[in-house]
Length: 545
Image 1 (cartoon, rainbow, N blue to C red):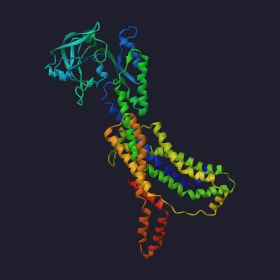
Image 2: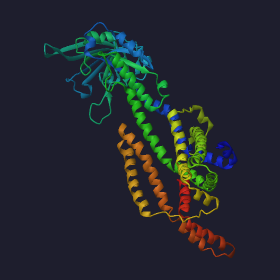
Image 3: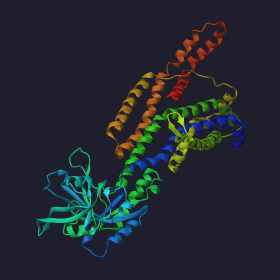
Image 4: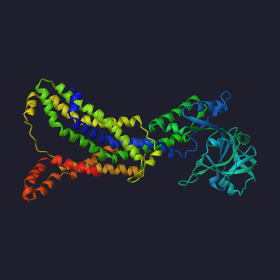
């Protein structure tokens, strides 16, 4: 009923309400949008130590057939979403129990095309020499190179005894091969922990051609732990993946993994620790959820301030609203019409204000992106900052602001629905009297403060010392925000209880004749409106929190 006419007639009040709606969720929006915008940078840092995104191995049936080739499997892998390139290789993994140094008991030999290191530069660091190896030459791992006292261009004799399983018995087979050393390397792949709680080291010792390894170890079983295997390195388009939110990234990579295993069944397999990119994204998702929860939890004072502002603004307009409802009720409007009268205005203001909350959040994220250090802003920082707005974050900010405003407006709408004609006439005749406000027992605040303070300490200790797994991070995110909100509200409410008494006593001590009348009036008013005085103090406390 004349919605826009009613809103335009109260222009200043409506504008104030819109600003309050925007500010109520502006901090929340700024945090969510800024976290989403910095996510690609953080994820890039977390995946910087992932040299191989995925490694595909083969089951025994693959080596017992001749209908599906390695090229067929590679074509299937390369056809998957976000896959950039692949490289085929041969890998030998054996154990030599006769060595004196246990660190060298596990041995790995890699047979791969030297051009593969252009596609996967993080896997191997060339320490000296060059990648110009062939069937009769090799690269030697740096520590082994120094231990053996080798030189570039010198001869290296690979001598090892392996075990072959024939006729249900294991027999030892000596293997010896001479190579020319063309370079040394530092490996970032095929790592293991030789002793408990010690740094990982690589068990990759020699890099040569796949043909050479096939000729030397081709009789070994095609086993991951002891034998020779064909494998495929897979590289993904990380830039395309990180444009999504953490949950979407996990689902995308998980779908790719399932698709590869399904289409290559029963030959292809991706080991539990062979999809390092997915593990890094999984850790990023846990980090993102935890940090976002902590950030939102510590921004709760601003959120509570916004809710208090909306409630206070609604209270200021309540008298005028009651008179409007009383007027239309006395003129024959039904309860539903009065309900719609109040709620339509609140919904319209809430929608526009929620849009303002999203825009305020965007502005807050941009300002956060320009921060160089504490309270120091620089527009140059924005050159490397890309604002990334996820639909989920926008919906959360919009919904939060709108729902808060709707909850605050709903009691007034319900009162309008239930208002009787007698009450409507009383409103118009000014018979609504102000009653004294009460705060209730402080024991309740103390009990709530103690319980939620203890829970908050447990949650922070969990985050600081225990770390968070997937389920724990979800529980942490769902728990810490309401716990922090209730703790802060109870704490500030408890400390604000004495505001009215302190204010009244201070004002009552003023004896100056020119001020005594006003101070006594304010002193008595403060005692009457204890709850309002406490809320005012709580609001100021939230400002400085």
